[in-house]
Image 1 (tube, rainbow, N blue to C red):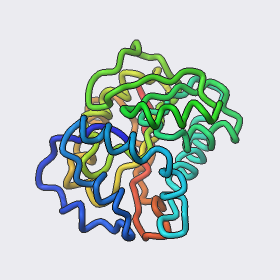
Image 2 (cartoon, rainbow, N blue to C red):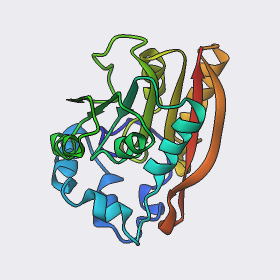
Image 3 (spheres, rainbow, N blue to C red):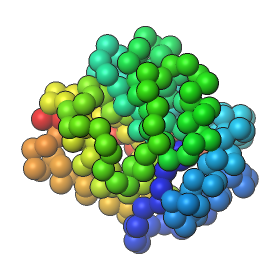
Image 4 (spheres, one colour):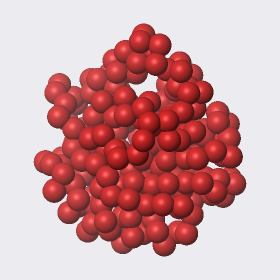
Length: 224
């Protein structure tokens, strides 16, 4: 949940999404640019896990996404955790048996926390609103949790995820349900499917921040 803001229009007021009183989330949903995002997540890194996985928020998105990866793709291949944050998704994947996990994130502070988990093969700074330096077809699975939300990464990231994923591979990404339509994410996923670049496996609403009653679309795509 620590990437650069997207230039999107006509999306709901981010403060209409329940933050359960979190000042951090209020700031995160109203980021003004990559420098603002980097500063916020560097500052938040130390308390991020406790803040989001605590009783007020009940952040289960990483666990739900990891279970989805296991069910749809397995964990034997090479996995990119795009927007890895402190490593919550990587830890859940490693617990399921994944051993080849790379992570990228905008925030050095978050990457430091992710490195401390010991579950990542490689970690690197990256801005998901731009093309990544990795070659095409580099991964069997790309998983992205928490970055496709208010003030963060826009729908164009799906095209980059497709580029990075091997034919027959799987993309698993959460999109905050509030902006699935208005933020252009549904339209972009539909466009990729119409161009026969992906097969849409699922876009169901799942628990995301369960205690705050906030859901997300769990987008599962099979790359052609």
